[in-house]
Length: 295
Image (cartoon, rainbow, N blue to C red):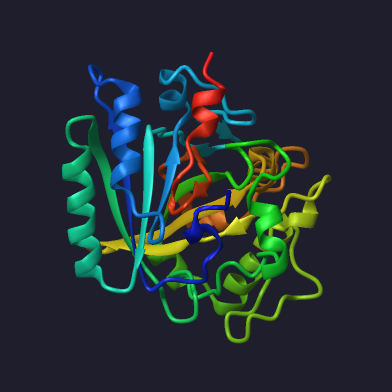
């Protein structure tokens, strides 16, 4: 068993994110079979929500739902879905047609609830202008950070993913002096060099893997998104345990020391959900864990 290929693959030029809810009268096992038979794991990553997993009568150790919360005026929303699909490619038209094929194939069982188009900006930069993903582990360590191992048949190679859509306030960003914007990140936009000394609220100090104990490493696969004149970042982070993401998010919101991440001055999440990404075997989703762990 192996991780879904797109999790460990390098950057991609274009992407489309789809979320689905299972029809109330749909047979959940039949819906799962339909999903597995219509997904090409070579160019699409699939995640399953906790409610859908429970509807199958199954339990996945470590899986949970994201909970909405407000921390010192910062709202962290929870918008769970039953299925999340990350379509990867290089041509936006091809992604459009592929997404239509998936939506039509799943229509008897699932309703499409959201669609977001994303793209690569320059050298993997966020729309703020800063390079994204500099905290990612080296390639030879990425699989251990992002996937589960030693958990048994159907679990090894699986992953958890945290997904949030962040909306940037470009008026605020555009009005900030470059040195203040650099300080909010803790790196220079011009050369991506991290400051040896940065404010306690700098993003690199609030979200760094080693800023919490135990260290919370994640494999980030985020991409910018735009719609009309709005835009931001689709934050996507694969982990072997959701506690890693939660530890970083708590530190960003100031839990423990009341110092909030400076990012919240000009961006905020408007969605949030966790998903479990099954491993693959012989080029197909391996759903053994959902069958063997049914209650």
